Image (cartoon, rainbow, N blue to C red):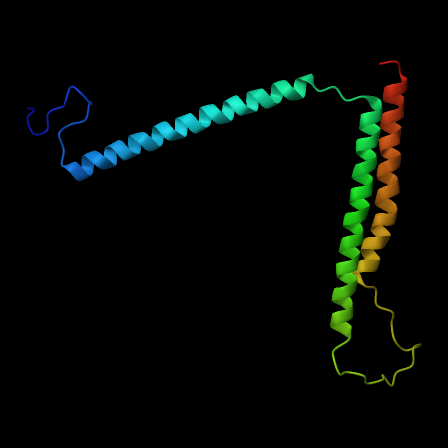
Length: 145
């Protein structure tokens, strides 16, 4: 039987009160679990990189992926415009408020909705991005790579 405060040869933990010994073991188990998680994560990352290295995209695959990216971006833009339009309508038109303004249309300054601004920016960015993609894509793949 080991003395109080002496190390036990079996587990390397000093003879301590039971509560403290359990905390030390829990901490050791938590550290071991963290190491196992890190090893698994590293292993998964290495396997994923090996798979990615074997994947070869063809010219048509890249063209189709970029086409899908542009279509998806247009759908996202539509969703943003739709939500901005609804928000603007709810802001300007309150339920039960049917009062007609006394001002003439000439006196009012036309306000731009945020949705108009998004639409104007999208009309420039989407074609510009497609042109840039084509300027990079076609010379690269037609150069006899």
